[in-house]
Amino acid sequence: MDIDQIREDTPALKEITFMNAAGSSISPECVYNGMAFILDEESRIGGYHAHAKYEQELEIDLYASLAQLINAKPSEIGIVENATIAWQKIFYGLATKWQKGDIILSTTTEYGANLIAFMHVKKLYGVETLTLADTEFGEVDTTAMDAQIESLKAEGKNVVLVSVSHLPSNNGLIQPAAEIGKIANKHNIIYLLDACQSIGLLPVNVQKIGCDFLTTTSRKFLRGPRGNGFLYASSKMLQTFEPAILDFFGAELDGANDYNLRKDARRFENWENAYALRAGLHAAVDYALDLGIHKIWKRTQIVSNKLRTAIAEIPGMHIADLGQKQSAIITCYHETKSSKEIRNFLEEKNIMLTLAGDHSAPWDGEKRKLPEKLRFSPHYYNDENDSDIVIEILKAAVK
Image (cartoon, rainbow, N blue to C red; front, side):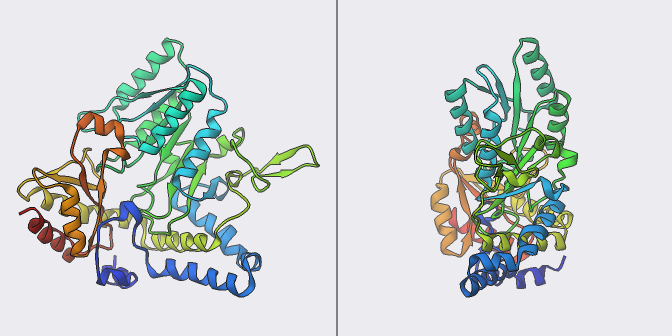
């Protein structure tokens, strides 16, 4: 991997030390250029005509690239406004079939926005959410998961969904997605994987994972623009699944009193789209594919493990991450200095990072009761000098 060329592709890295890929990553120039090109065409010939002119790239090639990224079929991909919308479109579509007393199984590290949806369907339909047991390291205990499902079935309970955040936003955990999939598939339970932090960081193969649905964003480790994301819906699910909301793109009118649902996952989309953002997403996906996701993951592991180890060696700093094997999300806090104060000090030195509060994973927050944390999320474009700068400035911040 040619790190010098990668950094040349992202000129802003000459001015800042960027450590917030898990928030909204810094994009390579090709992403900006792709968006600017479509915007220029739209200003020159109008949005409809620009779309028609580049239909191959925006409507066919993009879906092929996204499918390649996760080992799916293009017909199983839908592009929407963001990861939360993608997740909600799946979740609330499933919820139309649920009944009072049905059970959702999720994790102690589930994302805060998803928890609101769990509470919402409890209020609307009486559907309960239970948490899966963790191992001593924080991952889902799949042996206990299997036993829990067997116990619920013996009680006459109907488990309608397993919902898992693959890489939680507030710690370095990597959930064992494929092992969870094996248990969910064994019991014929629908499996929804929130992959907003894993796409673009590590290899994700929906066939090996065994998920029925996957949702993700463009703006994080994939390095695409804000304002779009995509979902995967398996061909099996598409045979019977109808979204909770449709327009005349997801379905076409059949006379004045009936409609026919689209056959593919684009039934989750709307007619109107931001095609400049799609061009940026396309550029980001192809850039990642050209580099190779396995190479990206290998490089990012080296960068993040070095930084995590160095932070842990600073007196008074504590790593807050979970998991036997950890992602590029590094969370930490100091014994006496507030994370907000430290973050402000670092940003004054052009180190871009963010904070990790309990709102991103409230159940985990209640369980561990940690102070607000710093969150560093380096990526493959960070070099040795970046890590050295962070450690030097962090040491100064906590003196």
